[in-house]
View (cartoon, helix red, strand yellow):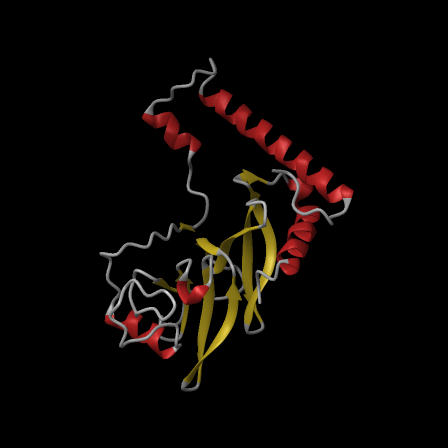
Length: 227
């Protein structure tokens, strides 16, 4: 669980192990505050206290066969050539239809419409890609350009303090299925890695933030999960 990859420096592995231990201990302390007798059962009010809203906008993308895109979303998917508007076979993942079974579209800019700036979460298996992807587009003149691509899942957005573009909260996974929740911020025409927020669901304590930013950033680069 704690080993990210066999070629990482020993100090990085030790730091990650210490981080997760400290985070889990902190979570248990918070649980004990809500439930002092350490009972395994909590009432509904206590559950709400333990599960606060994490980001400005928490996002859970669930692809369902009965959900329908809007005509605008279908049009955007078609114009950026992620799907085939003539495809009727919803079991074809290699050449997918413009359908909500395969894609979810989100606005990302507070000052422009979705027609100008948007991102797409692609279902695993689409285009023969085994895992989910997040692809960010912007319109330049009459053409859409690919701003960023991530081998990741979108799990949240936050309002930026410096840009009309929302900060993206993306979840990456390594070969051992460790989960890294990372913040990406917009600057100079594209999104850039900012920091890691959580590892395997555990918040990162302040004293580890700078070190873990470097470690996880190196892992994302090594595995080519952002480009």
